[in-house]
Image (cartoon, rainbow, N blue to C red; front, side, top):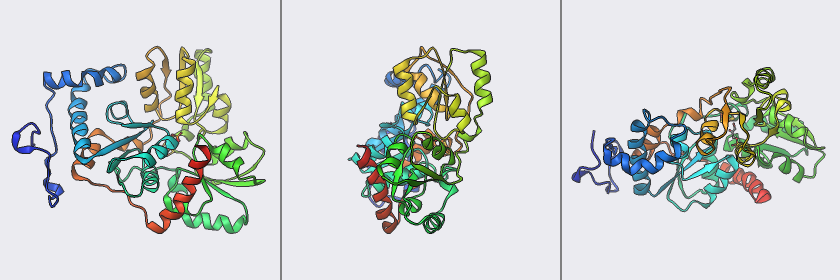
Length: 355
Ligand code: 13P
Ligand code: SF4
């Protein structure tokens, strides 16, 4: 494999290069590289072991070189593993924060370290940029629970009732809806419509949670997040039984009895802020497991109890795949322009409302 330090392998390339022939920058974990990367290791030393770092550090270095080469930024969702989230993510956050950041990106290329609907949203927000996803198979059980045709059938079944779609849907579904929401603004979006009844699709549990926070009648779809639906109130009660002082913080995609057990419910960003603000001795973040590691990296005094559920889609994203997406400029995410125009309206309406 080519070594980027070799003088004949500079990263300046001609425009007619064949991407399959582009050398993938490789670095050795030399003492010099270890020293150069030490400030980054400092950020993750509580959650990345010294055994793991020699594997990650050369890949992180290569990604950071390729980001400059391609004029690219990495948008990293809160569920990325810590070496991605803290070491290659240029912007980090929940779905809403990443959608907002995508709109402001100046760079030519956005690498979405997240799932496919997030990459589509970035493309909607900034259509002139090249949006890459490190693994095209990184989907979402909520996004695949509903189609554009299903939404058109709902329109017919509920004439005049506004349709709010969770951002965890395809662009084609968003194009059929009136406005988007995320877990951080769903109640505000629903109430902004000034309607007595609203369809809130596709997450049944998010819809049920929003119904507890508003007088608007909420009609739900039957989608579920395959990660959050697995948590149970009984497992959390057992953990609280072991330690009555533990704080339980839940994502609104959880089942209602789980949310009832929690001390606080909010989006991934709101959960992180809660921990930073309250600095509990012990906390359970009832959500995707990597988020606990990402917060633990910055809050070493907080003990995280982890009933661990991993999102198989988010976990498809790795340093190796991020590097390859940049080297080969592969896995571009595009949206049909006619669909994009209508879907963008739904996303922008949400962003403008909550700016
Ligand atoms: P957030 O908008 O809270 O980051 O949620 C996205 C998601 O996919 C949760 O499972
Ligand atoms: Fe979708 Fe759930 Fe994974 Fe979030 S955690 S991307 S909602 S499957």
